[in-house]
Image (tube, rainbow, N blue to C red; front, side, top):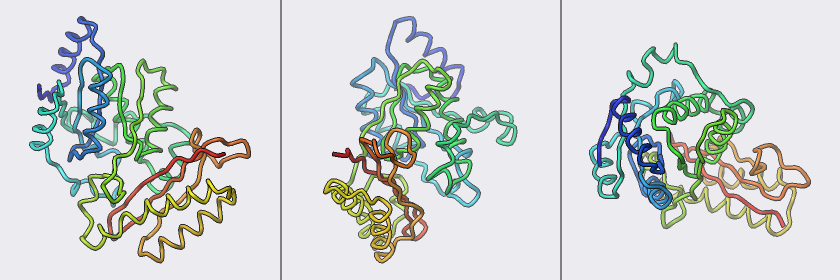
Length: 283
């Protein structure tokens, strides 16, 4: 596995692959890799000739009171794991190279509508930061396909919309959420949880499953189903950011003809923000 930090060197490698007509897959990450990330790499390796993984903690998507400085960085261990998996290139750019004119002067990409709702309402500017860095990385790597986890469901929809709107020549693949044995969605931020919080954390997914079961039983009073879940989670000790039932296709409020919805949730345990979602096909 080659470790490349320089954009020009990455493009040299990219040109050699292109000359050999190789299919290139890309998995962008912020590092501190867990099994969820590795499952993205496995999917990429099954569908492409070569795989590029990037590790870049993107300051543009962190708010002023969020955990940019504390975000876990484990580059050496990540490098070892990716090498053992047979990744072809690990791309590790520096902030000065990605944002050469500084964050305040950076041209940005913003997907309207979908970026401002749900998680975007709670974290203003977050999806602008996500869309901008993903667009820049796509321009650097120029992959044929890219892989993202469905745990960040809204992020996935933002990226798909950006790719469509900007006529990018690549396919975006969503990969199912990887969970711990007790159901907790894997996340780099789970390590912030105390032992007591970690025991409680799977309750979030359990309550989403109960919401799914209610919908599958025929309930369509979505606002009441949501409020029941909110009450249960608050009683259990969660500080809720949001729980929403939305169209899985548009993330708008579901209409009468909706065939598939997604339950989206974000909640705090202490200072740790957990997100999760569950898609439900309506009978």
